[in-house]
Length: 202
Image (tube, rainbow, N blue to C red; front, side):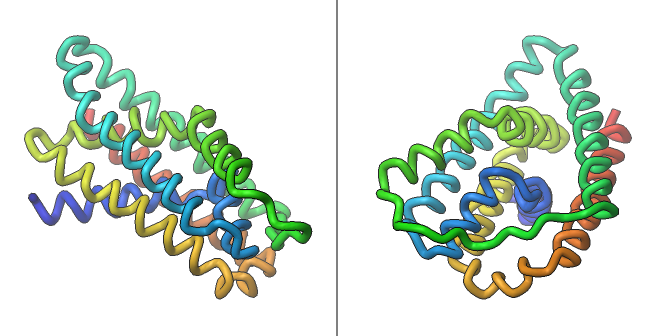
């Protein structure tokens, strides 16, 4: 285990997963409501771990068979990150919505998990982030992909558990549109830096 590469995987994983999307909003909502939090965060963390593992272990093998795939995926990943950075920057400069805890009756566990799985496995961005993007970045550390992957998986576990169980303390923060603008701006800058790193790797 290479600790420095593990930290790199952890950092990159946190950067990608912290972006506010449908899956994270759902986890945050469940945390705010205190409904099926453990089941939801475990489902998300395990799903992400599977996808990251596939990306880290299979991407290099596919790239070895198709040598032209790695640069294509790397540049495509950089292009996506640049687009994502612009999108987040637009959100930071424009109006931001406030995520509030929903009211209503408690939703049974089965439909809650079905929704969670759909938001995870039916979202094409999840595959781009985990299998393709993380797989491409891990290929920059030959022989040490496992350390990078372990860091990225740790990021998923850390983030989802923190989001799910920390939501009740974050509620006052998310009540402020300004907080969302700052978060979107930080995400935009980080995505831009990762895109530059990918492009420089060529």
